[in-house]
Length: 77
Image (tube, rainbow, N blue to C red):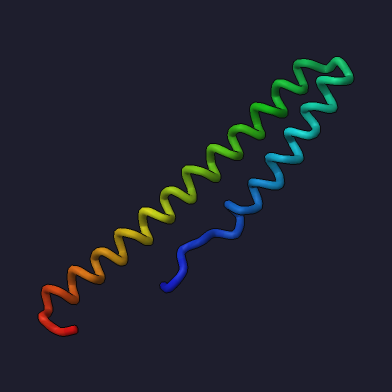
């Protein structure tokens, strides 16, 4: 695997932005409970996206490090 990425993680960013926008609209309309839940869902989406990309980057880094370690241990370049 040359690239580690997941397209659904990136789709969470515009979804979170949309939920945030809806939350602002609901707050302006006086629906504070609805606005609170919408912003909560938006923040959960951002947190999931952050954790996901952190995990993917850690996997990518560890795979590359393991690959380099195997090359150094084998004695060939």
